[in-house]
Image 1: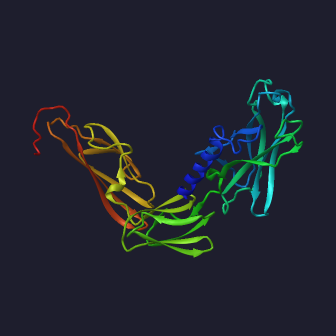
Image 2: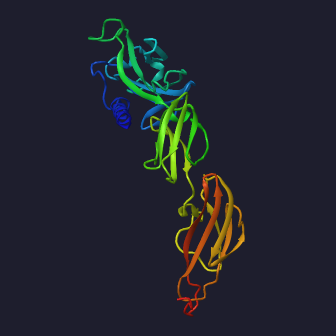
Image 3: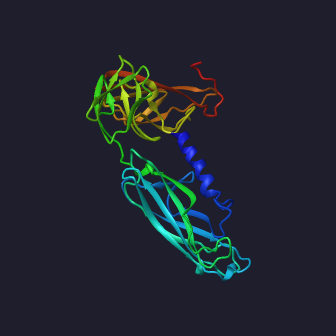
Length: 349
């Protein structure tokens, strides 16, 4: 999918980004020079369209003409047509026709016209989940009226092709996937998924398996006594929706101090907690090398480390004895406490 996006982006560069440097036809005296799309979200040059809603944007064009000989005095009448092909109905959908005339030039001495702009609307349903890509093409023509040879046959020329603008579904507007089911599994559980796309179970090797049951339901099963965290994921064209699921009981690595790595400081207050996702019925914290101030029987415990007046690191350990839907157990978390600035040798060493 990424390769396809890159290809579309390259095609866009070869069409609209370079149209100011080259023309589709060098033989025409009046040419469509530039076509740009603004006031709309883009990604890598590709216009992003709303899901199931119309998308409004502005298209701006410039046109060139000769300024030698009698050309500055000749009438100009032209049209720029923006359109796309509806493959569902096999029809050409015209979004807008921009008219071009002499009044679009600042003066007869200017080769390139003013910017001619018009707001256009891509209708709802032009892209969909099953057909997320489309292109808006730019065609143009002009009316020959008393022009010099070899353009002296009055009338409209055939439509000329200027190129196209790639467009695709804006992933930020697609329906959100929602998951109904528990955040912790002791053995297995069934999840109902609303707006599922491609469903997978991430980080699940040796931990859990995923089974599709139909009717937008999937079963996640724990493998033996494995503990861990997996992600039930819904993916559409790189856009992901996740539900984190905890399997089994907490481990020592699930005790943490938010944002703190490394050693603790002496005589300092810290807040330890258990990572979310576990259905814990009871907490019982204890500590070595410090004092519990509050939260002994809650998810977050407040602890003050002991003073360390010695010239070496002090040991610190906090433990949690818990009871949960998946059983009971005790986990530990150990740190060192930095020296407090004193010189005495720790008698415990």
